[in-house]
Figure (cartoon, rainbow, N blue to C red):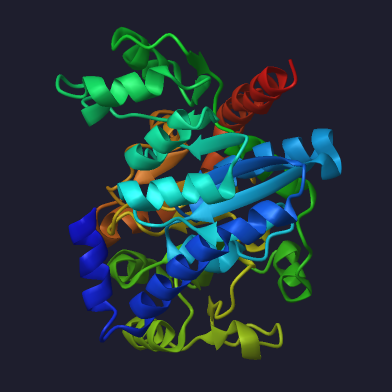
Length: 398
């Protein structure tokens, strides 16, 4: 951890983004005393999320706490990732959003002593061991939600006894699936409860409030099929470009990053004539539309007939629940393990793993015909996991 912290400081000498990240983490550590004073005598609940995906899993719990405790609770959310922090630093569902400091013993001690939380909520597999030990030493209750461990995870192996001892002292660990619960129980933990995926509640709630996009309304009048490409990287382009030549489809490309350099690199690599969202008047002179602003992807899925999700040729495929809730056939790259939903979608034929452009062209050929066939499987998944928040809520309110 110390080497990592020093490495970030050295990188910050020439990298502006890293330098800003370092400065904000230091500032937030100093400001924790102020946050504790602002909370007055309210119950202070601290939720930590790695990035945006984990925040979406924790969001239903934040909403539930606010609904039941009102102004008697002070909610603090911390991120480690700049992408998560930058997109949710002004969220309405927390009283304060901060960066988590690097997990050294000193940082952990200062964070817990200054913030003095009454409850800590960790999401998925954000196990910051020095911070967890500091929380336990100060008698802070710890709850984990949406935990999902792959077979062979380091916590399940011989030699991780000390870490499992920390887990055993938590109040409860809510898992996403029965397999994770059984693995943790087999490793000696008794404080494990299978809940399900909390993101399902969040996605269903967002679907009920989906926004109308006037320029896309004409797509409902039979102007061809619509393929939405969500969170696209340059590494996805060799796959999806194979489908751009199909004149029967409209192609709406939503890049993962929309800063100037990333957008220029993407549009240059596409090499086709396209409309740019920020300058588009709703007329389809070309069949490619590139969305150069953030915050619209979920609402755009409402107008799609099928979807390709990016990230499957990077670290991991991005959110597949959001397009699935609209009943869309899905395609994505091979890096898709570690998510309950992606494996279910692949097994039930809702999704197709594509490795090259030919795979994607075949997906496009059958995508629309699959919608009625996959509807029941999608409904089954969402109905079963919708109960996750009910189980978690009943624990918090008992």
